[in-house]
Length: 112
Image (cartoon, rainbow, N blue to C red):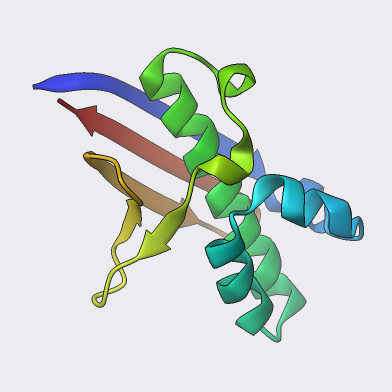
């Protein structure tokens, strides 16, 4: 049974400018996500990854019906399985992340 659905979209250029602040990275990304983020050598790929994870966290909070105010961004951990499919650690949810050159988006469906 579906408990909630959430979606979010953000301009990658907005995120790229924000990444100049290292405190933002630790405020938004879970330590496991930071490990993956730091493995990217391209600034463009880092911005795409960060924007996608940001969208997942926003979409997840919307699916919960709480908004991000009830949660900390870095409490939510979105990883990829062996096939590359994104998932939220410890949650029964379906996650989809997509991006173009200019925007990133995510969709989350939480099941009970």
